[in-house]
Image (tube, rainbow, N blue to C red; front, side):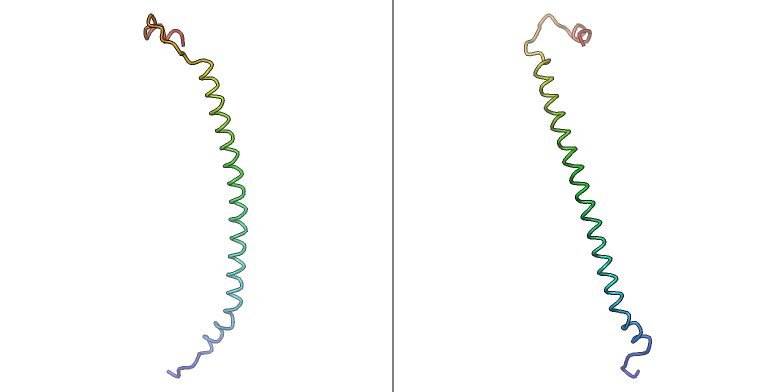
Length: 84
């Protein structure tokens, strides 16, 4: 063992900067893709939440208009089923 670098080692070291730059470019590209996906996902989630809120409000309004607030003791299960 001579303790020095072989020609193969020198060759690999000479390409290290290029490999590091390509790696950093790949990271930057991945970050851009993830950022765009995040924005898209957030917009979709906001839209879904808005739709859900509207649906809940509509269900509440329907329930308040149609729900029985008094009990008809003469109504048995079969009569209730017929009413549906």
